[in-house]
Image 1 (cartoon, helix red, strand yellow):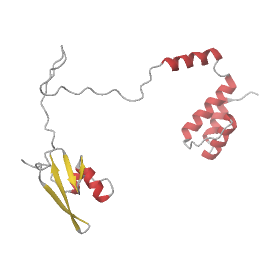
Image 2 (cartoon, rainbow, N blue to C red):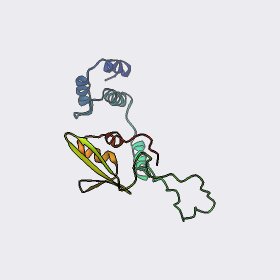
Image 3 (cartoon, rainbow, N blue to C red):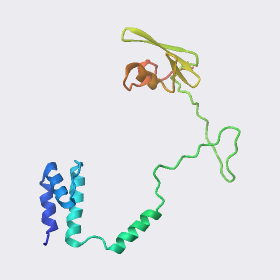
Image 4 (cartoon, one colour):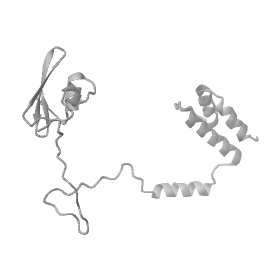
Length: 169
């Protein structure tokens, strides 16, 4: 059976997702849950070409398997090395320069301050800690986390507590 791959590809462009799924099932012998039109067309086109022109040789399949087994695949990005902290020396041959950034946001009041806001008829109070926030006995890393606990949805913490964009200390 001779398949004209060009004509088949042109016909695939006119098919609906449902028809592409049916064509996929015919060619691969199993159904697919994919509904991405471009992906379905590429997979079907690949299969049609493999059937018309021939698939990979057994030798090529073995070599591809060897390469895949030998590959050092990284599943997560490399960890970024932290800059040296005060009191530690950089590695030999490396110079570290720059300014130290203040880790606290300028919009935040000093630790110990109580932020209060009326929300849905009651007053919400959050205490600013040196490293985080306390709300109803629970500790939070950010004001946004506190605002989410209060509202049940993601809210910018600075906007929720109406903190100015620039606060002078």
